[in-house]
Image (cartoon, rainbow, N blue to C red):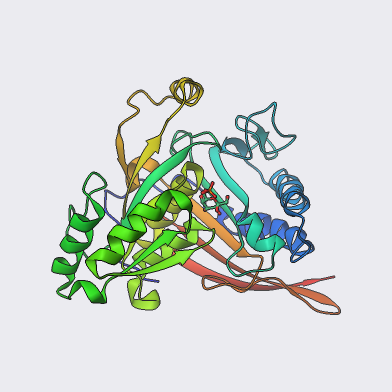
Amino acid sequence: MKLSKVEGTKTPANLHRSLTLELVRVTERAAIAAAEWRGKGDEKAADDAAVQAMKAELDTVAISGRIVIGEGEQHECDDLYIGQAVGLGSGPEVDIAVDPLEGVTLCAKNQPDSIVVLAMAERGGLLNVARNVYMHKIAIGAEYPRGTVNIDWTATENVNALAKAKGVPLSEITAIVLDRPRHAALIEELRGTGVAVKLISDGDIAGVIHAVSTEDTGIDIYLGSGGAPEGVLAAAALRCIGGQMQGKLILDTPEKRARAVEMGIIDANRIYDVTELAAGDVLVAATGVTDGTLLDGIRLRRRSVETSTVVMRSWSQTVRWIKARHAR
Ligand code: VTB
């Protein structure tokens, strides 16, 4: 992962630095809970375990937290719903986006890259989106000039522009795409240009992070659509590690459009960049549930449990990897 300079002006460090470690405890606890369900084929049980553990630990933190990206609407889920108050209620007012178990299917099948993710920002810092909304996304590393790619261009135009900026033939470009029927035409178009396509079954937060960490991963660009909540969480991470991304919401039903308006989205066709998806001072923590390319999974030992977490902060651009051993 690179520590390249993040675009945009440096905002004041409004989130207290001690919150960084508090967030680690939250994602650790959720990941340990979800890990009990690795490979058990029960997605709901795994997700519920992560949600309950995350909520319980969040409520020990001295914040006046508000869930802005959560498990769903209040009537759809018991905890971590949009608008729910979390934390002790005594500290700073913060907004929180969660994906208590990103890649539930990966966890249920015990496949790589199932993670717990949480982002915290100053009030109003995170784009508010409903759980069922999708987003077109494009992401590349921080090392390219701004405007090298554009979400409104065709995939062919984008990979051509990227190869030119990188100074390599198209055959040396690798794109990462979620393996979905809706991406069949995109995948065919990309392959037609000569680029390599790495298909992932789930987990596009990790996918976007991989695309901006080209030196470590060999992946040059993320293309396609995935969950809008995952898009905001990925953008929050890019605020800390660098990287360029654009997102465009897919508001394809009257209900989704109406809910988006309620949540403050006026222009349905707006193109958001990283700092518009996640603004101000942002903290992001992620703990591995299954072993993956970003993080190790939970290790159960006879007397202890080991966790592997990355926690980062936009203000200082600090990225910490925290291996922890917890007594059983
Ligand atoms: C992505 C990915 C998730 O859903 O957002 C994807 O990050 C969205 O596409 O891990 P589908 O609804 O077609 O799956 C997941 O794969 C699962 O939530």
